[in-house]
Image 1 (cartoon, rainbow, N blue to C red):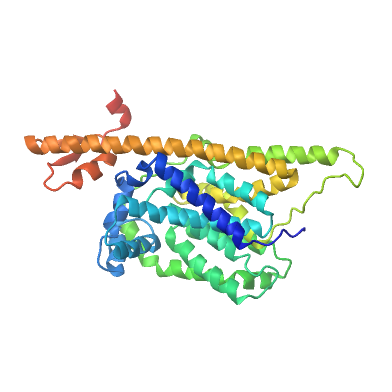
Image 2 (spheres, helix red, strand yellow):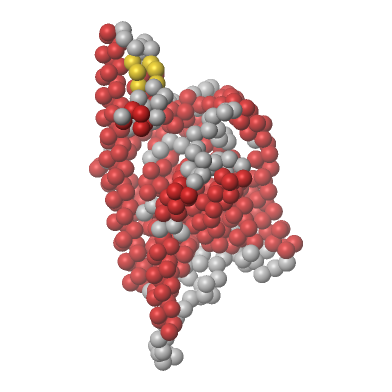
Length: 427
């Protein structure tokens, strides 16, 4: 396999500058991404972290204040303590910091196997996914999950070629713990990545097991959190907001998480076309090796997350929400980088440009959605003020504007939510 030139500080500086420029542009054209009122799930983050100590945060989570492990909320609690409060802007800066970290780790993992332009093309496919834009500006645990998954995959490629590395062991253990404590399904993404990394090693099974042994620290951390799981399931008995799995749902998830398959298929056809054309030996296109290192193989394996959750949905409980599969979008960076490496420099520019256009469209749609939500909450707040003056109860059709507009207002009138199907309300 042809080794790419090593990653340099200049590259990382250019990547950081590009991400900073993108954030600045979004701040100018869509401040609502940062400033819109908390929505219902973000309010859960706000309430759970509104305590004087980490122990109180964990206790609130165990009582059903959240249905997730504590890492993200403890991180938010630390930020909240340092800045003296938690505004919508502060919470979304936390999410954005995790998102940028995820992108940097993806790029660093790709650069061990591909050159800079192929790595950029692969990274841009991740940036172009609508879920990245959605959760980059949302104060929940999904951007941190992306960062932990990307960092764990990167850690598996530290000191590549060496069977024993203290640096790799430490990094692998740390990121495995974070990955298993950021979301309950984090252990599934850990299992995918670790298994893929094992199969890249041309060694005995014992040596492969030794290579990923530090990842068991994540499983140990999950076992430590077992009392939280039990307490949460007890407090959430009979409550499940995830619909039962069906064919239409599966097809929708395939459409959302596997659009890059079309790009890979086209690339494969072009490669076949090149391979089938007889050329003199000195003019034949160079076909790079398809072999992946441990880090990129671990990253690529995450595309299987939707399939894993389909199995969980069929055997355990429905779990086919898009945000539960978010790490799958990281995996497409590898096949796209490989495809454009096969096709040449022009293809890398085309893919990166198309991905940038798609990302811009998703960002514009996200700005519009947040702007509409902010207006909805503002209108609801005015209705709350009117209801307070008249002393009449206020009935809500949707929980999303109800919580930030009504429950956060002191002395609000009695608020009630109409729990009837949307189809009934429409009629």
